[in-house]
Amino acid sequence: MNAVVREVSPDDYEALVAFWAKIDGIELDSTETQERFQFFLMRNKGKSFLVIENGEIVGACLASHNGRRGFLNHLAVAPTHRRKGLARKLVDSCLQKLQSDGIRKIYAVLLKDNTEGQAFWKHMGWSQHHEYLMMSIEKDITRSID
Ligand SMILES: CC(C)(COP(=O)(O)OP(=O)(O)OC[C@H]1O[C@@H](n2cnc3c(N)ncnc32)[C@H](O)[C@@H]1OP(=O)(O)O)[C@@H](O)C(=O)NCCC(=O)NCCS
Image 1 (tube, helix red, strand yellow):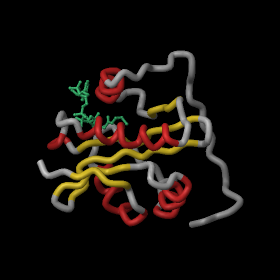
Image 2: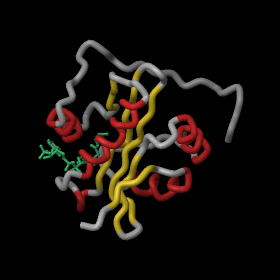
Image 3: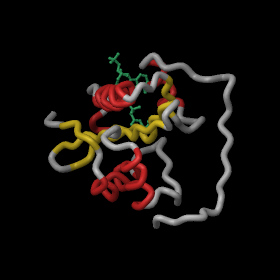
Image 4: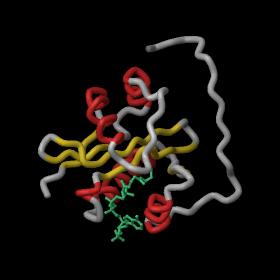
């Protein structure tokens, strides 16, 4: 395996969306535009990583924080490349960046019915929060970068 881990760059948007679209357990919604993706990377510079092999993305993880808490989203490895330690490398790379910004508490966000994903995080030593439930709202925006 000739896979290389590197930081996600704004130019990776299209290839990443195409990669995630093929992964069961990852859901992309209409808010994930190229402009939002680039804004996300600008606000969280150098914290997200992908794995590339022969020019193809075979793994990725987005990392961010809000100054208090960190978040990992869209962790995925291509089915052909699983169980080779790539997700561990991606998670470690993201966590190092968050830790170096002083972030101690980090959340991984995943779909409730993603039992495989939950088994992975538990194996990695993460625990499920039973006392929290995520609520959300969608609002009209008052300033557009799109
Ligand atoms: C979950 C996923 C990212 C794991 O990727 P991977 O590259 O195969 O994982 P790794 O090889 O780095 O595994 C790291 C460790 O976790 C274990 N592991 C991997 N997948 C596991 C699973 N589904 N259940 C339990 N343990 C798992 C590995 O055996 C390994 O253990 P070890 O280091 O102690 O030997 C991958 O299966 C995937 O993309 N799934 C679909 C998307 C998804 O569910 N993402 C997570 C939620 S956002």
